[in-house]
Length: 280
Image 1 (cartoon, rainbow, N blue to C red):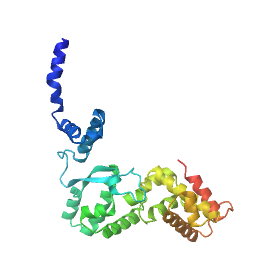
Image 2: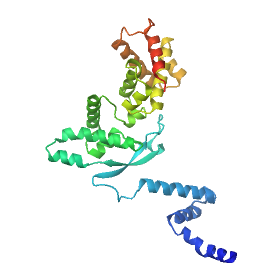
Image 3: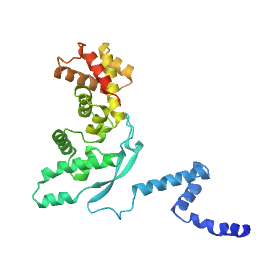
Image 4: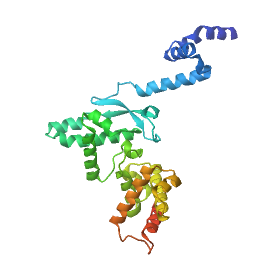
């Protein structure tokens, strides 16, 4: 019996390697011997095959008007100088031409009314699949300019009193203050909880708490009379980010000149209110 098992193993085991996995492992063995031993090669082969399965899924279930796109993962940590080839990507499926848009056009809807909704849909669909898109990506997909996408986004967010989950806002990239201002407005002056703010701005609790913590640090340093350079050194935040938060503080001060709580000075009230609401 044992001899039969050994013979079967000798006869049939090689057939397991007559596959893409086997061909890839043989390639690494012959062409890249410096990679390492058998286990290292097997892990590498498995990872590559998993990525192929993810980025080249079967298209049998793709509906008419859908496309596959590679987006930056929404949990990717952005940092200064980090390029796209160092960022984690994830495949997503987007509706470029859903049936409801075709129906709307057949009923006389104008493109200028449909396009803003299409842009908003793409941002939301990507986020629902753990990806985040930039204005440039949506511009390519809809064959319009990035500035037009920005205009659509601004109009949609104003109309719906909500923020679209774009990469710039989710990963805190770019010079815009919109998402920070919106989040801090809801936390401090509207008195909303972190959970509510996350739901209304489509940010993670970690992102909301990060804005709250960073802003509170800047507030406390400003109260002590530190310069922007000193604040950047103390908080380990970039000078650009410090300047953004300082501008927000100035804006809030102008909007709420008499705002105080229990007779405390403005900055103290601001800090206390922020601490009170920034809890999970």
